[in-house]
Amino acid sequence: MKKNVFYVMFLLFVAVSCNRDELQNQVTETEVAQKDPLNAKQINGKINESIKSTGNFSWTKSSDHLVWSAIFQGNKVASIGFGSTKDDFDRSLSSNNEQIQNEILALIEKYEGKEKSRILLNADKYLNQIDVAIEKQETVIALRKMKNIRYLEPADYHYFENESKFNGTAKSSGSSGCGFESTALNAADYTTVTPNAKAPWSFYKHNITNAWSYSTGAGVTIGLIDSGVSPEQSLLGSSFNNGLSSGRTISKVGVHVDSVWPWATGYDGPNDQCGHGTSMASAMAAPRNNQGQPVGVAYNANLIAYRAATNVVLDGYHEQNGVKIAFTELANNNSVKIISMSMGHIFSVGKIEDGVKYAYSKGKLIFCAGGTSTSFTTFVGVIFPAWMPETQAITGVKENTSNQKCDVCHSGAEIDFTYQMERASGNSVPVLSYYNAQTDYVGGSSVATASTAGIAALVWSKNPSWTREQVLNKMRQSATYYPSPNSDYGYGNVNVLQAVQ
Image (cartoon, rainbow, N blue to C red):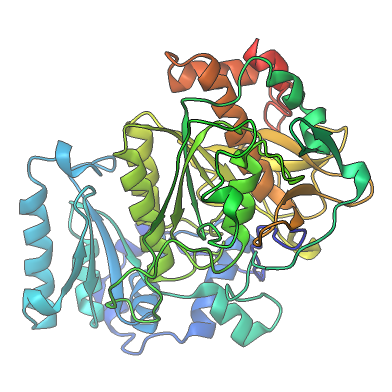
């Protein structure tokens, strides 16, 4: 769906942000003297000041008072990453993780005056990460002095929701990237291929249809982290093996809790209640069907689709926690080779960083969307977690170009590959609709990411014994700017036929 672009909105102000190292050289009394927490408008203002002056924002580099204020205004819940070093995120590799965790909880008990049962909300079973209830500023100050804490962040602060409330220009996460509409496809935007499937125009630009003579993605499993997959679309359900697609599986998993309260439990199921995840699943792996519907890039690949969030903006406890869980579970699934996520945030989230690093450590090839916004924010660079070195950042470009971003896409030094998804006419990529026998268009860096994950599946299927790096190198060698990547568009567009030959 054309409206299903990856919305990332924010307001930029002027000023400078504080550096945590500088703040730690100040006397503790300066922090404690600020007895009252900042309100949400003040917190967002400081975040925006940092983005304007430095290009980014980090809780780690923020003052104790700002971090505590955001925790206080975010249901008094904090996320703590711990370990002996900054890269000590894997519990299975940390012999002293229980000791460190208990030391942290003991300190919180001391300052908060509460029992452990009222403090610990969640202890991740794979990561050195916990979620805790904190009310007092003194607790935050004491925790941030501990040498074994990698990060301490608010776990349920809603930046986007507050931007919308106080400034009226940035939209909240309420409907970002979502839509259930269907659109009849323009005949110029597809070509019919056997047995009666619609191959999107973008496939020909990347030589995907010719590449199918060598690989269709068979034997490769892609993990999709998004808003789920529609129960109303049988081609992404009971008819996943329709037409020339055969011998593969689709699994749907729900790890999202539909509640405004961080302490609520109970997943709300795998079904897409947004529409975005359905579009991504279609772009990467819809069957080469006989029903006159769009086909996906890797039409014989297996798919495991996680409903991890309500929409594409990861702006709250359950969204961020769901994504973390999805990354760790897909990391531990030996059948999964590729993970694709077209969601994110404008600043880093520690628990998601840990999840990405954990999946990367298990050999997964991770693709993340570089960012999509409305026109007034398209000058913004690559978003989180696409900017992480463990991920491949993807953005969308205009037809017949490799260095002209789509009207709503982001670009920047962290981009690794591009995908042509915007026609001169303004139309984007045809996909399956949320509903049976209906079609739609989808654009932005979201569909560019899902399609590139499908391309990786074609390459890996052709070379099943290859490692992640071998697959990536082949994609790079088959792309526009190899061997010298473009400063804003990475290696550019992949010639998929060349990549599978």
